[in-house]
Image 1 (cartoon, one colour):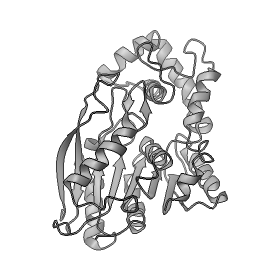
Image 2 (cartoon, rainbow, N blue to C red):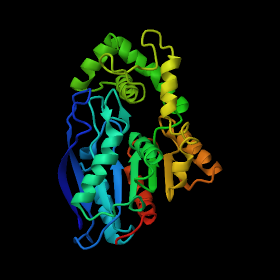
Image 3 (tube, rainbow, N blue to C red):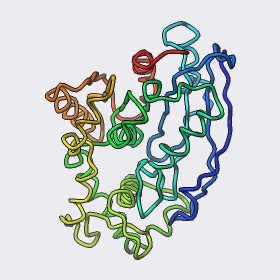
Image 4 (cartoon, one colour):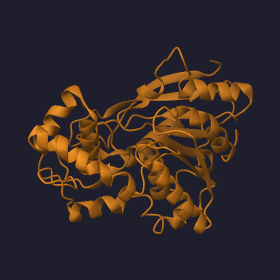
Amino acid sequence: MKGRIVRTSHESLCLRDNPLGDPHERELYVYLPPQYDGTRRFPVVMMLAGFGSTNHSIVGWSPWKPNSIELFDRLITEGTCNPAILLLPDCFNRWGGSQFVDSEGTGRYQTYLAEEVFPFVDAEFQTIPHREGRAVVGRSSGGFGALRLGMDRPELLSVIGSHAGDAAFEVSMRPMLTSAAIAIDAAGGLETFAREIPVAGPANATQYDAIFVLAAAAAYSPDRTAFPFAQIPVNPSTGELRDDVWAKWLEQDPLERIDQSEGALRTMSMIYVDAGNRDEHGLHFAARALSDALSQRGLPVRYEEFDGGHRGTSWRYEVSLPQIVEALRGPE
């Protein structure tokens, strides 16, 4: 690898004393391109991990294929991508993922990214410390986090990249609720499931759906009154939808938030959206709907659909990152 990776840590004030007791000191990975010599400033791309993984997962070594940092380094070395700093934060929590939003049930993870991680990296490295020099990208839940960070905090960044990001919840998430109810009911209820599942992790597909639903509920429909600090939108005894809780989920859906976020999205240089045409969660339907909704409003969306499913798609960064970095302000 021609560039280098700096592994550092940051002590968060806004994550201190979070409801789940997760660590408030978090490790960050910062990739510096070969051109980084301390004399020029470079744009920053923040990369968010998918559910059930974290920044350590992204940098995991494999003998068979490059990880995302190694891929980015190769693109820059070959001249396929302009040089940039790649920033990998840690927003993992007890339930397997924070969805990168602020929640009374998990902690203020969007605030952590916006008000602590970006300023920390700007102070430690030669970044372009303005929105025109920043992008955020992610896959799956990370794509959701990228969409929401751009929608909610447009003053921080100017490019969004969402690879099969969670959206169109009626299509992509509602079918998971029945599967989740089966696992939660079999465990003896939500509280029992929540106490047992972090110990060994999900053992089958229904448990995986259930822990995801719990993580999403902690983010979208939190309840500080009792552990596990979340209301799930399904009755685990009957499988019936809880309309009042489901309505709270829909309020968090990026597709449902486009109108209220149109002003923020209009300030973006580019909104990159893609998905595989056989996504197991139907997130290609979500990506199509997002692209259509953004296009209809004249927003700067770039949509691509590829042959594939939901998993094993980190290679898509080879396609998106050169476009995303190109849309940012270059080295100063």
